Length: 58
Image (cartoon, rainbow, N blue to C red; front, side, top):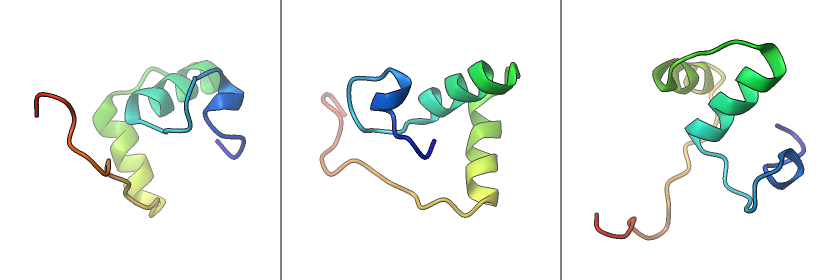
C-alpha cells in the first residue's frame, strides 16, 4: 500500500476497505470480509479517514 491506489490501478488516491480487501486478495490470495479488513487496520492503528462531504443521497 506504500505506493498508493493509483499505482495499483485505481483512478483516484482514496483507499477504501473494498480496495484494501481486493489488494489483500491479489497479493496474498486470501479472501477476507470487510470486517476483517477493518479489524486489521484498527489493530495496526491506521488513521481513520472520513470524507469531507457526505455521500450523495446520504
